[in-house]
Length: 199
Ligand code: GRF
Image 1 (cartoon, rainbow, N blue to C red):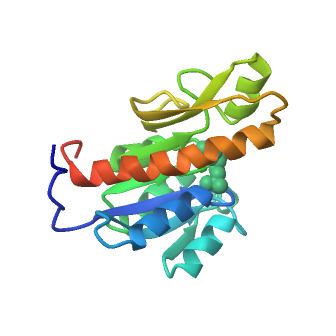
Image 2: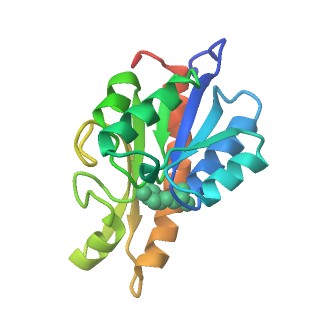
């Protein structure tokens, strides 16, 4: 089958990060390649000093930080984040290692995909790798899904499996999962940019 023709306008992404941003880097690298049907218009973080924001700056991409400590309530933070994202004129928000639950204002105004380092619906939450290892599973992996009001509960878009090797630690297993996760995220975004029937 022929791939869908390239859309005239690249899909405009806002990527949210809390940490080192290797998933973001994979997205930025892919976006820099000719023929890629998406572009990163801004990168946002919930805290100062993230590697993700540094990576965005190095790539010449606009950044913003939306801190919970700058506002009185989580609802205020949710509305501030929704407004900031709206200012970027984005088509899609990507939560790529963003370690906060998004609130109703963001989710009402924006479609959001998240990447999670376990095979959902198993091991949701902030410690998916640790929990999978502690459970003794032999295969785990990563999941890309639409974000809804729950924690890692939205409709699944794609998954990749990763074997747990003897002697794996949380760190060694997470590193292998992240290799699969980076490829998955780029593939998912490419597909969502080519076929925009989800909009
Ligand atoms: C990823 O495994 C993501 O799924 C999880 O945290 C990790 C972030 O990695 N929530 P990075 O910041 O993209 O390197």
